Length: 369
Image 1: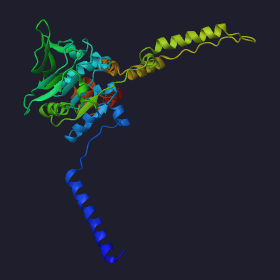
Image 2: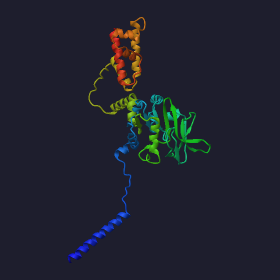
Image 3: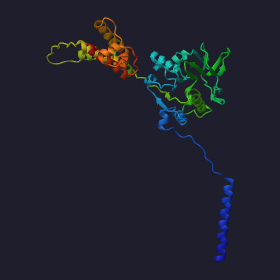
Image 4: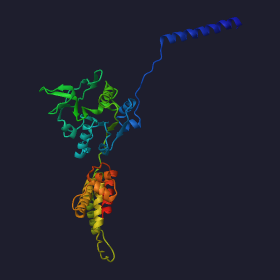
């Protein structure tokens, strides 16, 4: 092959490659597609992880809790998103504290789609339920710039009772003409309560559908734009053994004692029986200490504090002809007036405050002797 032929052969091959490349680039373009993969372990444990990431991106400080005890320590002027598995944990005391927190400026978003009609929050606002037909709903939040769309709940709907909502999202009317509701909002003191017929709209699987993510963001932006957010879901239900250990210790101990006595009675014994030792009688102070430890574990510290205050007042009545003022007690004992006033009339809320009150009462009695 001559050099001339080799040159034209190489030139033709390069030209053909260039033409093919130009044709390919002019007829095809590179595109990217998002593909949903399997959830990671963190998303499996936390069904509202996507909502949590969304709110953190908007500047909120978010934490997720599964212990019902956190209901007693809600952030002031914050937001609480409460799932439907709450009814067992909403004791009368916690329910009262929750409504007081809302009245003082808190914002509550509560799931109303998977709760029993006897739920304290549902009964507080007299909301009723019936099954609807599956549709989509339009949400117009007061103070928000545009309408949003959410998926309707296809199992049941809420109905307004004797308490009128501030605003609502209508659902399907039943055959009798009663108008069902998908979302209800009530004013309570300085705060608000939003009942949404199914908090599932904000979980990892459905938050991207329709305008669910924007609805959650809009609710917080129009109600509590700067407060901390707490998402409470999958509240732990104690097992039968945990419940017995917490609420029926005496009955459980009695059952174990009876079992041990029965086994001792039926199991054969060999040798000479030893005489039973005389039972040791415990002192009164040991019984009092046991009662104090029991009340401390049961968080019934008000009982102990009331007893300590009554004891001190009885001593003051015997020691002085007239009930002295806090300032007089401070002069006689050398303690601060604020500490004495808090110990005698204050309302402690934490174990450390109870401990401080008990310490002040004890020191006051000792210094007045």
